[in-house]
Image 1: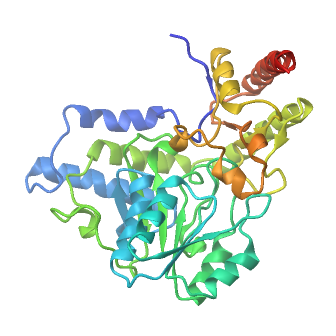
Image 2: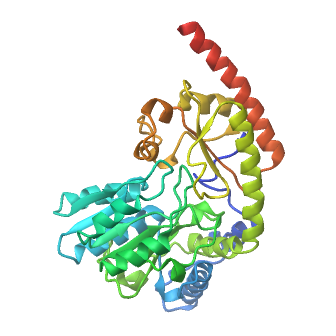
Length: 382
């Protein structure tokens, strides 16, 4: 089977071998409903408890603060909608570069009487602190700012932002889905009230995520039923996925600094080559994830280029995988003030632990060849 070099790790990651081995027994000889009182149920409950402890340890949280969900989207919805359900409708502030699974719940809450405000960012995709403080002066009840942007990789100073939200007496939520496994994530140091995580971004299975929740925050459940997950997420637990998530978190903490350093060196090499081809690197001067490069090539359609690179043997993205059905330019780039035409040319490369310098060099060669062809076609059309 044709297998392009995979350079889209922000969309999802391959399942690690250790995670696969941990999950395999739960496809066969190990089974049971964790709510059952017999040995099969107790075994499942113990596996979930062990996984919960691993997830908590990865972000310096207590196991009782970890609420398992089906993924990052559900965790984000659970915090925003769950908190809003128990509060009097007020102000809800989300950054202008949030993932759709934060932006869309905020829009839904707006239809329920909440006043939604977007926190603007500067040209590098960092929170505009003056505008942020003006919004806080209006006392929003809920604030959500992501730790690492899924497209640009830009990192926000969440501890500083969260401190100001606390002074304003609001609840602070942070989507850390893209950060875990790439940079250190510490629930205590971030000082947020809710932190969203996802398994499949760090070598774990699709279908598992978590909301790490400050015990002082009360939420209404999205799913009512048997009262699993502290009465916040009813339904029989997906034991095999939760087990895999726990192992993935444990692995992510091992050798993190070394892995990040290697990926950053690889990204710098990539961006030297991109600049030589005339690419504009978005957010180049901002702190970013070590593995992520988002760039544009004037006059080139990003979707077309991504398709040609796929045929050439390199799997990359034109933006967020979760919004790939939307033909509009990246909302993140538009919020940063990037012109729509340049935003439409955007391509994202997100490196993973298995990528090599050879992969990057091959990608740059394929990119150069396809650029030359596309520019020739453009010149002929003109």
